[in-house]
Length: 267
Image (tube, rainbow, N blue to C red):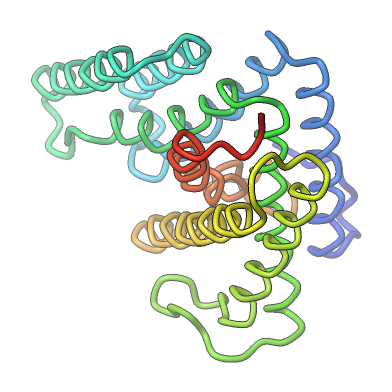
């Protein structure tokens, strides 16, 4: 796919423009809500799943990819009415579908696990965006964005010791701390504007979400490094693929949902 952003732009400029366009789409999606929001979330999920599967499967693995897309799409579609039983049935459906494909396949490299992993890793976390209230969705999206922005600029300007060079050679402790501080600022801002609980809880949730987002970033970096791939895709100029852009969000959403189920931040 050819980018519409002029090639004369620097990588940083393309990154900024892509982020602004993505932010505009998010604001529009959450402003309209309903089916339009579900459609956007489903589209992002399917593209990210495609990038995930492409890390491990060739372009000829159509059947397994389609099965993953169908189950992932169902998870998103059923999200507003999802419950524990539905989740269990979805996971079992993934396992059965994948085991049947493995049983029928005559290919030596056919291994069960990736269809289920794609749904659990991508579709299920993203489905939480359709369960959370709009202010909660905005809160966690801004937390993750702040984490990314803080880590990128602080790491670039300050530099210093690397966190885990074997997995992600460019990530520094200064970037990690910068991302955490930016996320804490978002937590304070939301507490001041719309919080219904204590400031310490907002800070705790912001910190937990930030750590989860950074861990998610490392996880996706490890996947790409294992497969000797720089980016999961090339659809987002300056960012790589959709999976590169939402890797932190995929880990942050379940952590936020688990904590706030017990300790709600917004009424």
